[in-house]
Image (cartoon, rainbow, N blue to C red; front, side, top):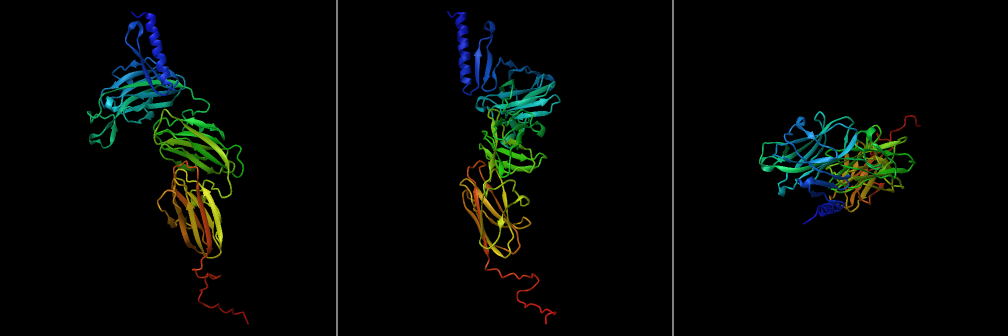
Length: 469
C-alpha cells in the first residue's frame, strides 16, 4: 500500500519533470491530484512568460456578452469551450494599476476537433485594443505585451473563424454555416510581465511613446498582434560629416517585416519591406543637418507572440562612390557626375526592401552618347532606367533574372540636357553585397554639330553684318 508521503513525493517528481520539459520551449500540462484526493487541477508552465500559472478555472456560462463576463484573475487562466461557430466567450479583467500582461490562447488542432481561434482584448466600452488571429486550428494565439491602463477595466473574448459555404472567403463569429466549425475546447491564460531595459514598452505606436535607442545598442520588440506598430527613437548624437545611419531588424518567423524611418516632423525618409522569414536592412541614410533623432517604425505582415525581433542602429563612414539615402526620386537624386567626352563614373548602393536609387548626370556642352550599366548581386533582379528632366522614362533595361547585368548603350543626349539614372528591382532585403552602377559618355559622332546660335540653321551661310565695311 502506497503511503501519503510516497504519493506527495510522486506528485513533486511529476511537477519537476514537467517544468524541466517546459524549459526546452514546449508548453506542458501536468495533472495533479487535488486536495483531499479531489479532482485533478491543471498547472500550465509557459516558457519565457514568467513561470507557472494554475490551477485553471472552468468557464461559467452564460458569458456571450460583456455584461456576463466572469473575472479573469491575474495571474490565472480558464478552460472553456466554444459551443458552436456563433459562440463568443467574454472574460473580465478588473481595474487595477497600470501593467503589461501576456495573454495566451491555445486549443487542439483541426484533426483533434479544434477550431481556428481568435483572441481579442477590448476596453471597457467594447472597443478592440488588440487582436490575434494567426490561425489555423491548433496555432497559438497571443498578446505577449498588451498594456492595461491604470484604473481601467478590460475584456478578453474568445471566438472562432468560420469559412463561408463552399470554402470561399471567411467570416468571423457567424452562425450561417453552423456545421463548418465544431465545438472546440481551449485554454486561456494571463499573467503580468515586466519589460527589461532593452525591450519595448507598449503602447509605443506614437512618437512620444517611442523608447530611445543609442547608436550601437540593441533593442527587442514583438509583432505582438494584428497591425501592431512599434516606434523607436534613434539617437543621432555623435554623427559627423561623411557618416550614414544603418538600421538592421532581425527576422521573425512567419512574418514579412516592414521598416520606415521618419523625420521628427513625421516625414517618411525611407520605407522598406522585406520578404517572409528574412531580416531587413535600411542602409546609408544621411542625417539631415541639425537632426537630433529619427524614428524607426517596425511592423509585420503576421504577428508572432513567441519570438521577438531585434533592432540595431549603427553608423558607417561612407566611402567615395557610396550611395547616400534618401535618393528615391529625381528631387533627391545624387549628383553622379558631369557628362562629357570620355567621362566615366562608378557608384555603389543597395536595393533593400523595395528601394529605388536615383542619380543625376549633369548636362554636357555637346551632344553625347551615354552608356550605363548595373551589376546586381546574385539574389537581386535589377531594373535600370534612364529618365528625362521631367522624370519621364526615356530608356529601360530589365532582363528579368536575378543576378543579371543590365545595360543601356549609346543613348543620345543633346547638348545641355540633364539625365537621371534610376536603379530598382527585387531584392531579399538583407543582402551582404550591393550593386555596382557604371556609366560613360562620349561625343556622339552620329549627331550633327550643333551651331553656337540655336536660331541659326546649319545649312545657311552667316548673315552679313551691315556695319562691316
